[in-house]
Image 1: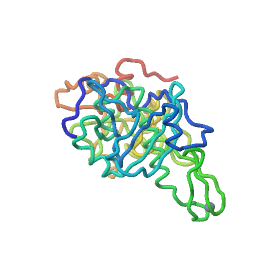
Image 2: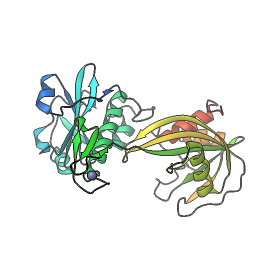
Image 3: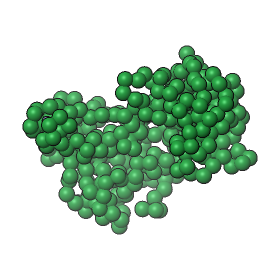
Length: 312
Ligand SMILES: [Zn+2]
């Protein structure tokens, strides 16, 4: 739906707020039993969240999913909210398309939900949780040990192998995202796929057996040739594209000569604190911008321009 917009653009990080008491020992993913308890359902169709319109905005917690979505492909329990069970169910992408003329529901990809603030901030975490879980289930249908089919257990928090009995647990992929600073300047880069004029923090996956600090230093060196000394953790953000955890850090540059990895970055350069403040406020003289407030890169830059980001 292209006409879907809500009035207020959020200024807070997306996906960090989740009021659910997560499912730990739930064993029954049966929808009928849960609905009898006043359960609500988070619905994902393909890559899109199905939201129920509510006043000017919408909610991700549906009392009953629209029938037009078609068959349920997967179902799990996310947890409880104020005592009510919160389930999640997955439908095919075509299900979202079937809602085009539905006045009560809307299908929206999760990035847009976050950018537009389409649902209350404290529902965003549950959407990220549901999408990441379904992604994991969809890609772990067979055992990595013996190749036999696996089945969902404990209402979706585990998959057990039907052949060798191995238990498989959901994975989250840690990604370091770092604002590397040197005095009154910080290092920002852009990838060719970024929106025009947008610069962001460098980022990269943590490698197995690596600390967060080592990942910050290695990724920065690989992408920009800059050596990093001190590293301080600032904040984290679930990033359900598809199942990452962004770990936001401040890094102290020890060198200043940039050597670009052209495979990763189209450009990287040093920006003054004033310049970053102008980019955040969309008043940079060259039209340069930052990622939106829902992204952790924006948050890290903002903390640095206000002096709140410091080394421990
Ligand atoms: Zn197996």
